Image (tube, rainbow over all chains, first blue to last red; front, side):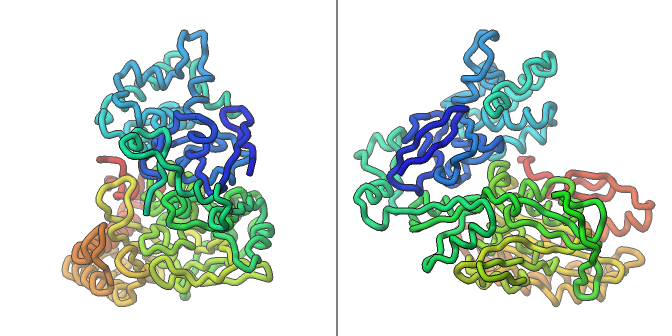
Amino acid sequence: MGYQLRVNGVHREVESEWLGESLLWVLRERLGLMGSKNACEQGECGSCSVLLDGVLVCSCLVLAASAPGCEVVTVEGIAATSEPALGSELSDVQRAFVEAGAVQCGFCTPGLVLAVHDLLDRVPAPDEWEIREAISGNLCRCTGYGRILEAVRRVIAERRADPTVTARGVAEVAR
Amino acid sequence: MERRRWAGDTSTLSTPRILPDAHAEGASGGDTGRMTVFVATSVGEALDALTASKPPEILAGGTDLMVEVNFGRRRPDAIVSIGRIASLRRWRCSGEGDASADGEPPEQRELDVDGVRSAGVVEVGAGVTYRQMTEEALAGLVPALAQAARTVGSPQIRNAGTLGGNLATASPAGDTLPVLLALDAEVVVARADGSRLLPVRELVLGPKRSALAPGELIVAARLPARFGHQEFVKVGTRNAMVIATASVALVVSWEPLDVRVALGSVGPTPLRVPAAEDYACARLDAASGELRGGRADLERFAELVRAAARPIDDHRSSARYRRHAVGVCAERALQRAMRSRQVTLGAGGDRVRVGAQMLPEGESPSEGARWATS
């Protein structure tokens, strides 16, 4: 059984033997996009977070076969649309994670990157509570969150200093 | 139940790599592996799909059904996805001029709930997400629904989970259910040959058992708008991503005095507590916003709530703790309602707006509003 998904701006054919597969499964096992991680398969950990029509969701809870016609953005889409002029393949959020030491094992990072892009594209200057709430669905068991919060603050400061850098990535893919 | 194994996961490296069971069945061509997926774009299409002799499972936000499917606990032959039905994702308020979310002209009408009038009727589409419920326009009309929605899962879950899904799943821990029960909400249930209005109190029959018949689809819930002072208080093992250990929805209308109390997670269904409602009505003084007997009355109120609870021991909590906690929730909810009344009466109604809630000045937001603090 085949159907089409639009992932990171590209139409992808999905050949699937069973239509009960989650979007996470299809992204990883059918389309080879390993950025979205699977840990809990029940929407608890946020490691599989993607944007579905611009809305942050757990891809493990999305039935892939119900998503044709939707725009899916994964962490691979975030990186690919960053501006080469900045001398990096990474988006500003990803770069801030690296610079702030917000990545240890890296498993939760793709989901957190999506969650932070989602937050900062909606709320350019979130307060501390808004940041914590926005990442509350993304479990990290090694950094202790301090440096993740620091990374978010860096992005806020950078975007404030240079408004032309705002909201790269997500908005472009969705367009 | 054996979990599917993920080819890319390191967790599978120490064990023999096997084909995921789901795929093995599909590949074998056996009936159990086949699935039909209908993506409905209108209620009519969904209802048509539901007329099948064996109706498909209904998929809304996926936060319950997909967990079951992922874990192999449910293997539906057919699924009808209703997440793309635009009309289900809207809400509207009739009875006032300014609060229609979808631009339709509101009807002029009021909802009479046990003799107490509301400022209109809010009809919330079944596909409205928790996130939408916390947004200001709808939160202002049904504050307790916003408070309850705010405590559900994580941002990702609130972006996906829907009111209709919460109702149809009929979990005793469904966070919106006590609110809907306290507000005497009605559920609009459609099927191919018509529709019916079902009071929420008749919808939930037991844990995850609802009065919905095969082929029926919840399309909306109808609630009174701006009805009384509303509170939702929930206790869980932490503030984020938590299923309720106990919860209370409280609605107090001061003129005329009317009190409703509904409990979540402490019985096979959400429970109303008429004894506590009657007691609070008898003991509250609308002119002062106080209980006539002070602290003793408050404790008696909590006792009546605890007595009405029918909790069980399970992996989330002991029955004993649930009973204790639900009384504490009820006490806090009533205290907040009283403080709000006192502020309204005393200080000329000065209030600060905190998220979805109207709080007396100086009071910190409730757990529902400040949940990401730890």
